[in-house]
Amino acid sequence: MAKKIKAAIIGPGNIGMDLMFKLMKSEYIELEMVVGIIPESEGLALARENGYKTSHEGIKAILGNKEIKIVFDATGAKPHLMHAPLLKEDGKIAIDLTPAAVGPYVVPPVNLGEHIDSPNINMVTCGGQATVPIVAAINEVADVEYAEIVATISSRSAGPGTRQNIDEFTQTTARALEVIGGAEKGKAIIILNPAEPPIIMRDTIYTKVKKPAEKAIRDAVEKMVAKVQEYVPGYRLKVPPIVDGDKVTTMLEVEGAGDYLPKYSGNLDIMTAAAKAVGERIAKKLLEETAKEVV
Image (cartoon, rainbow, N blue to C red; front, side, top):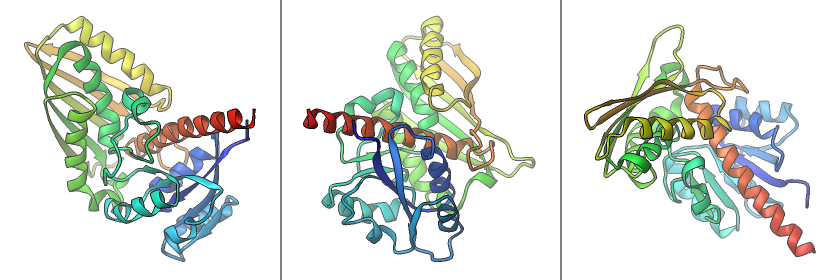
């Protein structure tokens, strides 16, 4: 097989930089370029320091580069709506880390296999990546009628992009609880906690189920947590599912890997880790297809 698939990152902010450091360790992806729109960007300077090509011309610097096959968009919902058709026309696979939801929602351990061939994959939101797996696991054994999640993150780990996309965050997360998680109705709430020292990401998942079988629910949730931990080691149950009648309450926390951002920024870490996991699956598939063509 060829060595690696080349990729680029749009958006040299916190998410883009954490993703850059994660991709440095990728077995299947070679990061070719990081682009933004601000010449004096600290992220672009950091990318250059680490030996990567950079540009402040944004997506224009990527379009037409036939070597780049995968593009990670770490900008915002509105910019991605402009980027998506351009990347598609240029034959590039877009992995969208914004709440734009142009392509199908994907949470790796739940439904990546269904959308591996999509030209645009949406990584939902940090709250979605953390809580949808739990709702999906419960739904498998208990039929979820209603799912409500409360994602609490440190105010320090919520940058300008997160704050500008709060409305999209709640809407996209709620929809993902239904589309991927299987809940008949979903609701999402985000809380920015200003506490010092900063808290790590914590999520509370409330579900109303039709079949409240406690052991089956606990077993399903524990299996799903193990799957997520394969790419997010800091993902863990804080309180295992508590069944009270037809109501199930589960609490978890997400500690970041500390690749670039502080460990309390688990909300950003789970997004970049999930995006890397998706990108690697796609890259591996592309490498296998290339190998078959050569044979």
